[in-house]
Structures are given as C-alpha cells and as structure tokens.
Amino acid sequence: MRRITALLIAVLLLMASSPAFADGTEIQLLHLNSTLPATTDQAVYTISGKVDEGTSVEVKLNNADLYKPDIGPFGMFYQSVNLKMGKNSIDITARKGGLVQVIKCLITRKDNNEPVKKLELSPELKEAISISFK
Picture (cartoon, rainbow, N blue to C red):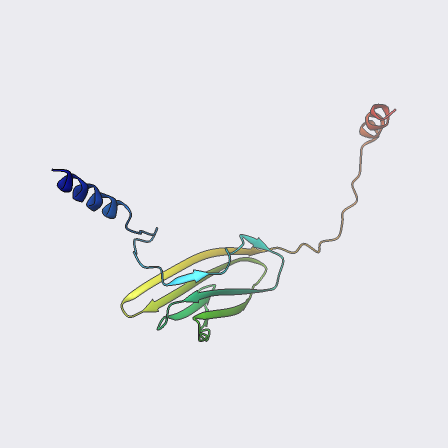
C-alpha cells in the first residue's frame, strides 16, 4: 500500500511540475540576455540572446525591417536595430523544426535631450515660498 501511495504522489508531482510558458509551448527555444526596456533614449538598441543548436532567429522591427542575425558556435546571437522616435514594435522569432517561439515587445524611443524649460512662478507663489523659508 505504501508503494502505491508513493508512486501516486510521484506521478502527481511530475504532472504538476512540467514546464509551461505563457504562449502554451513547453520548450523555450529563445533566451534573451536581458529584458527589453519599455522606453529608451538610444537611437540604436542591441538585442542579444542564446538559442539551442539548429535554431534560427528573425528580428522584425515595426512590421517592416527583417533581420536574420548570425548564430555563433555556442548559440549566441546579437542584432542591432535603429529605433525611430516614438513607438517601435519588435518581434523576435525562433524556429527549430516545427517549433516556433515569438517574443513581442514595444519600445518607445524618447528624446531626453530637450532643453530645460525655465519655470515661471506667480508673484503670490514667490511670496508664499519666501515666507515659508524665513
């Protein structure tokens, strides 16, 4: 009876611990070296990661530019993309045999080099500030 109980518990644990990802796949083909930022001030952004042997990678920028980075001997890849001002959609697709994994993200490029604007205070506010610091 103990053996049957132990076997049942082992089977349940194995079923509960099987890997599952948000897109429903059980095998992760693509591992990015870092998370992609939501915003950046960089005109050029480099995407890098690692894939299993025999996996191809495509990077699509704004549903137009398609890049196919070379995969190094250890499965490492990198691809630089030119970001336009505003929103940039990036789709990173890994394929191996019949398996496909897609990572989608949106990076907003902002111009952080805007000139500093002079703050104008009303006379009443200036008076209130000067009173509070006396």
